[in-house]
Amino acid sequence: MRNMFTVSKKLQDLPPYLFLEIDKAKRKARAEGRDIIDLGVGDPDSPTPEHIIEKLYQAAREPANHRYALDQGMPVLRKAISDWYQRRFNVRLDPETEILPLIGSKEGIAHFPLAFLNEGDYSLVPDPCYPPYKGGTILAGGKPYLMSLKAENAFLPDLKKIPLGIRRKAKMMYINYPNNPTSAVAEKKFYEDIVSFSVKNKTIVISDLAYSEMAYDGYRPSSFLEIEGSREVGIEFHSLSKTYNMTGWRVGWACGNAKLIQALAKVKSNIDSGIFSAVQLAGIAALEGPQHYVVDMCNLYQQRRDTLITGLKSIGWDIKPPKATFYVWIKIPRKTDSIKFAALLLEKANIVVTPGVGFGKNGEGYIRMALTVPKERLQEAVWRLKKIL
Image (cartoon, rainbow, N blue to C red; front, top):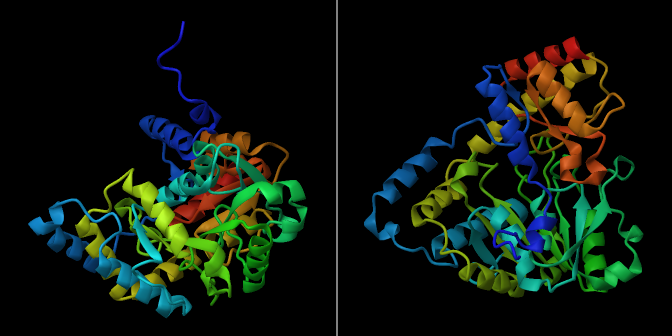
């Protein structure tokens, strides 16, 4: 007899969403009254800048902003994004055809495969990776081909190792630098190689640039769209979440090739009704307002990074300071798998970290720590690690 509650094969094929599992364990520990240091999910602990909040407050009081938003996003927001890209990367984007605001970049990244993948088509997915690259592919009926990110290759995919048969069948490729979870960075030569690969193999490039403004020691990440020929083959996703401490606001965008933007817009017009207009106006305030908050954010995370790295080195952990993101990707200093090691840290030290295998099989042997707690708590975390290890 057929079970009416049997979920679809696509849903069954999805791996458990890692952060939900971590959140369950964290909630349970806190319910038991334990003092948890949460270095798991990357969610900024600093507030959204006041001028952005004030703009939301003002805009939310306007009845005209209470109606359905335009699917394509407000023209003034698209113009603000275009101006920001011009200032930041010297990339000119047409606000009418090459920019699409999103309800956070995550939903756009996950929905994009619906526009181009047919059943059984391949997408090239880095491993380890941000989970929606793989999940979006599976939900669209596609097959992820995993490109290994290894320390010996600076956590960049080795394009030469992708089999010829897969290259011919792959419709799209995800890249993400500065990288989550490894915090690796990519230089322009890498992007040039990606463009050449894409042209030769007729593969759409999806660049996730969410962490471009979170960099240290004078390093300035590049945009894929800075590379000659990139706009003919690719699309780039960005977000206000990390740059302006706006993770809960859900506002981001896709930009690049006009045909790719148009296809994603068609998917979204059948799924959602756009971003709340007041949030769009607050997003403009973020992009056009004072930018010293971004500098302050980078200084804060760099101090925390240095505190954590110094502490981990003092207890014998071999680790290099990341140039960007607010993550530290750490090779586990003992012979055990990442889930067991993360469970040990939660059980014995009340520290939440993310097991590397949750980002893909090549993440095994690593854990990820987020720099989203004050320095004093990072110092406390190191003391607890020293005590149990």
